[in-house]
Length: 158
Image 1 (cartoon, rainbow, N blue to C red):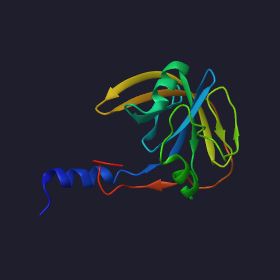
Image 2: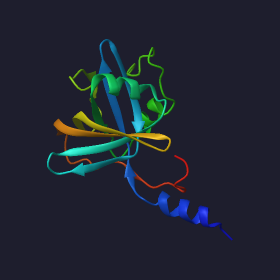
Image 3: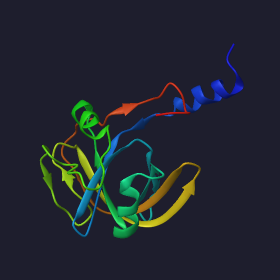
Image 4: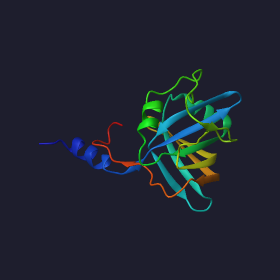
């Protein structure tokens, strides 16, 4: 018999989400991080929210730059999962082997199906994550390719 915590964790894990690569640049440093907690936050102004675990190298860059680029993954994310799944130190070239285009928000990964350039308007600490809210001021979609979607077995871990 499952405990109440296990039942709640299973229910939270069933909230569907996509996966994207959040990229950010500040001064001469750029990085990218795999994110799955992304959601549209408002219509006016058009805003999204994204969560990053405390201590991720990208957090300090977002705080300094005040902006980020969300690169939305298509229905076959395996290459990006393999590339970004391990994480990167700020000294590492997070984009080695990828085709990217530099933007004012961060590197745009050419193989992604959409991108959103965001100006950070709010940051809130939520437990073990930082929640960023960004006004979408730039973006585009490649075609009608469907985004990657998934659910987790448990809401207590990735």
